[in-house]
Length: 378
Image 1: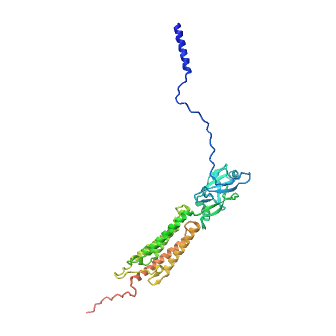
Image 2: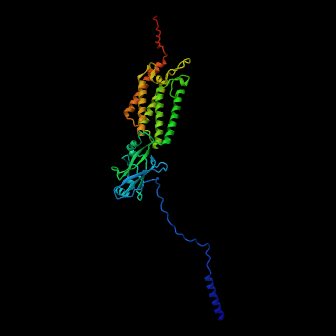
């Protein structure tokens, strides 16, 4: 009995000792640190940006800027524009709480297709990305057309609808032509024009005939017209791509002009191919100068050639003026295209007599056919 009591007491004492020893739990857990949330980073603003607190009055635009840190007041196409509005909450309420319903106005013209990217209701800012939309073509034509420099100052405002803009004292410099890209473009076009003129003078690029020396063959009016439109369209296409960042700029009427020029050149080549080849000791026609070649036929300067040459130059001037004024290729009417087609058709029609005249050597007459011998009566 005693031994049993001793055994029970020993067991209880051992359990008490084990309960006093710490239990091994591996690596102790690190102490929990209290996390402090950082305030959100405010949007970038140019140095010296004015801060105008709300006063409970009507909304008013007081500042606008871009996001280029070197030139924050210069904004162009595809750039972002931030507009600061006093009493912005009132403007947002007028737009039924829809940020994208706030309309951008530049020079008093609403840009309905350019929707707001975001609104900062705390600071009263609304941000846009300037993108050219077809719904605003008339406004963009006035903003981008007839540039007198790389950039010009414009007024900017916003409104809750397309009818009325809120009062504004903000302006920014609108970049019409990127300076660096334009200088590169001018250099490339000047180089291309110099190469084209050199090829026209030294090769048979715009010449036709059978003279053995290519650069002594007479200039061809139809090949000149085709080359003229090719260079103008290429130059205008690259120019508008650099300025507007658009690729679909060739209009149907311009495509028609290119087709008229190509068809005229093809028709003239087919007519020339049917001409009688010169004798081996005759070198063929020789150039007498550009203007004399394109305006003259075997009898001298001809009206149909002069007409085609003048109309080509007139439409070319209209084409260049339209690209400069509106930064888009012109849409020629069907009447003008028909006039150009009639001029080219007249040129090809008169080229057939030129072919017949060129087949006969100068000073020679077509011999009369010899009479057939008749049998004498027996």
